[in-house]
Structure formats: C-alpha cells, structure tokens
Length: 410
Image 1 (tube, rainbow, N blue to C red):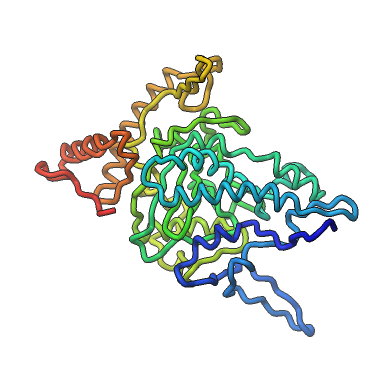
Image 2 (cartoon, rainbow, N blue to C red; image 1 turned 180 degrees about the vertical axis):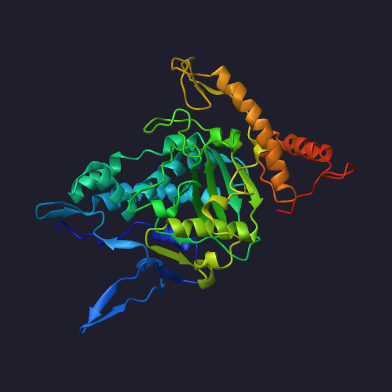
C-alpha cells in the first residue's frame, strides 16, 4: 500500500446524504430492504432492518474504488477522479436546488450537473455490477477503469426537458437511496428488473428522477415524450445516443412548482422500488411511502401527468445555433442531429409532433387545473403561456370567464 489510503468509499457521497437530514439531526433512519440471515451458535437470525446511522456509516463499501496491481494499491480514483467530480457536482446540486433564475453560477452548474449524475449512476454497486455484466470482466481493477470511460447519459439528459420541483409545502420530504439517479418507465415493472438490470434511458418514456435535497428534485423528460405523452414508452427516442456533446438552453429550465403530499409519496415510492438494497430518510415514516400513497400500481403512478413539466412553457423550437469567435457557427436540431445528418429538421416529424403537442397541452391543462405550476426565468417572457392555458380552460367552461385560474401560492 502506498501512503495513507482511504478504505471506506462512499458510493453516495456524504455531502449529498447530509442534504436529506432535517436541521439539528445528524443520523438517518437507514433501512436495509433485504437484511441478511446469519447463524450464531447454530441459530439463524435476521439482522436488524432498521438502523440509526450517520452519513459516515451509510451507503459505503470498503475498497470499492481501490485499484490493485499485484501487491500495489491506490485510492487515486476515489481521491482524484471522484474528488473532482464531487467538487463540481456539489456546487451544481446546491445551485439548482435553489434555482430561481439564471445568474452567473448557472452556466458552470449547467455544465457540471449532468456529468455528476453520470458518475453517480455508475459508481454505485448496481452500476458497477451492470458494467461487469456488460463487459464480462471479473477483474475489479479493469472494471474501475471501464467505469471512468463509460459515462454515457449526459447527452440525452442535456437534450431533455428539465423541471426542478419542490416539496416545501409537503410534510413528507424526499428520501435518499443507494441509486439516487432513478429511472422510471411506467411499462417496465420492478419485477422485471433482476439485479443489476436497469431501465434503458434511450426509451422515450423513461424519466430521470434525481432529488437535490430534502425539498427539491430534478425531473428530466425526453422532449419527444413531452410532445407526445401517448407514445409507446418503450420505443427508442429519436437519435438516442451516448458519448456526444450536447447544448442546452438554460432559460428553458422550469422551477417553482410545489408538489402535493401524494406526489412526493409517489416519487419516494418509485425511488424505494428502484433501490438495490438501502434507503434512508430523516424521519422513519418517510421510509414507508407504500403505506400512505394513493396508488402502488406502477402503470398509474403518473396518471395525472405530475411527472411532466408545464407543457405550455416548453417552446416548440426546432434548432439551436451557436456562433463562434472565428465567425463560423454550429447547428443542432431539437434531437441533436447535425445539418449533414439524415433526418435533420424532419418536416414530417415536426408536423406530426406539432399536432400531438397541441393535444397534449390541452390534456395537461385539464389534468393539472388548480394545481401549482412551474415557471421559467422571467426574462424568457413565458407568462403568455399561462394566459393561453387559462384562455383554453375558460373556453372549455372549466374556468369562470371573468377571472384567470389562480394556482396555489408558491
């Protein structure tokens, strides 16, 4: 061993865990979903499922990131690789947890959040086991180097629609699990996921749920699903790909919607069902959302479209053009296709999605009427979206003609 090395490697960083502790508390209610049975003096007994542990003892495994070459070992991956990823990720998580408008730090946070989520997805025991299955490698050191090379979700996340939802008015807050970046697809059931299998992000109906702290959560939805929520959830999104750069308009990020108690419970239920083994919460009651949630039917979790962003505030844009200092420019359509690629700004797809998007906006307005709404940076001038939505509801006789709908105070 070279020098003083760390051995207890947290696959969910302690700084991230502490964001889920209520003020004045230093320990979680830490639940083992599959406690082991051990034999003591010939008598089998099951280990305690519920523990009261601090972040130092939660979500870690000895030497999970230690590189071994013969008798030589190093924790360089833990210190240097994850050290830098965590440093940038921590600032990004803190920024977006309180996001209200675009300010100077937003540019760096927008660049750093998706790579941190990528690292968090692969660094867990499930992520490493999935890499082991994909590569067929049993060598742990080879697996660690592969983990650094395999980051692949940032491209599709950057092209998705981001909404940061709040739980400030809900008595129940978000939990933390051993798989914090959680995928949900309503037609891929938990019973189908034998460890370490994962839902495919390339599926158009796969949502990404990533709590940023006790009362803030990022939800990323594929733009194609936003434009047509009736799509077959398991079909592949347009131009699904990995390992490519992507550009995001930060002014389109939605924020400020306050979730209802049952909506927080549904997110916690999804996260619990998707956890590999451990979950933690500041309050014991929050560990058991299935006892109070309105439904545990997987296909009905999002019947009221609460996981969708404010559809009237999602611009129906077709491309992003970036000018460079040398006078040249780069262009991408809404699905990341370049001008020389097949399907770039596909007219048939555009016309088809325009029709389904308009129908989806109307359906969303009816389903979400009277509930808290997201907003975007005031400088984006999107207030007209709420006016158009209220006008539609009035014409349908769902709102009094004399006054606009007043959503719950946020």
